[in-house]
Image (cartoon, rainbow, N blue to C red; front, side, top):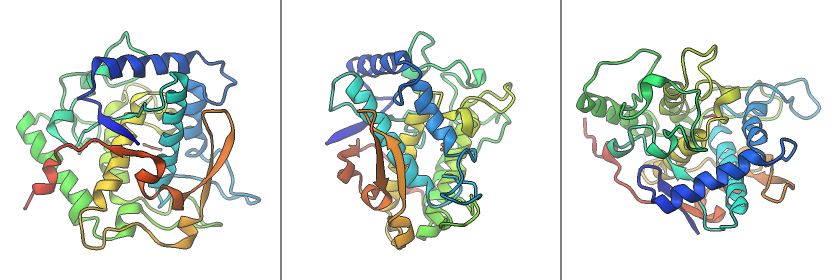
Length: 297
Ligand code: C2O
């Protein structure tokens, strides 16, 4: 079992391993399916209508539907296995950017170091440390105090995880079956805070808010994987919140498959049904405080 840790609580030893793994990833030949740009382009390929559904002229898309959570879970799984194998450490696990708690509100410092292999120049220069993340961001700077921002962030989290996400389809997004048009509708968290943190991180001076602010380039920024670690963690947390908050059981969903390259450069096919419990994938998340869950208004 590998434990994904809060990106704000990592040790120097962890940072050394992670930056070395990225150094190796970035120096693989560009034709290697594990290479940095190939990994980033896997995301692009499944989000900007690069593929059609098998034998049809219908665009294929993993966002804005019930594929969002499981596709990204598998994407991170293989990315993590690739990094682990590049440094020969089977215990290596990705970090998560804990932007739903005050201790995780800033760009995690290891990603904000211009000398690090985890740095990306295409980010909003106004949002470097110690700027606090705005989970309600829409391209304008708020002048909230950190305390006011904490209240806004907590209420965004409470709404998206609790009051507005009482059923599986509200949380996971609309059904998406063979022959359907792409992007039938996102779940609560996919839109906000997932989408707002993307655009908050990207640079609005670039044509499409690159890197993080647009799908084709988002995964070029190593922080993408820490961001999605937290999104993935919210899936696990949501299922502990009670009521009807359980995984989808539709067999079209459970039997759907995706293909990825693994750490041995083999193309493998994986199924959504095998991704519902992180323990089946041999990882879990460090337990950290969840401030928004206590909100009562
Ligand atoms: Cu595939 Cu954060 O998006």
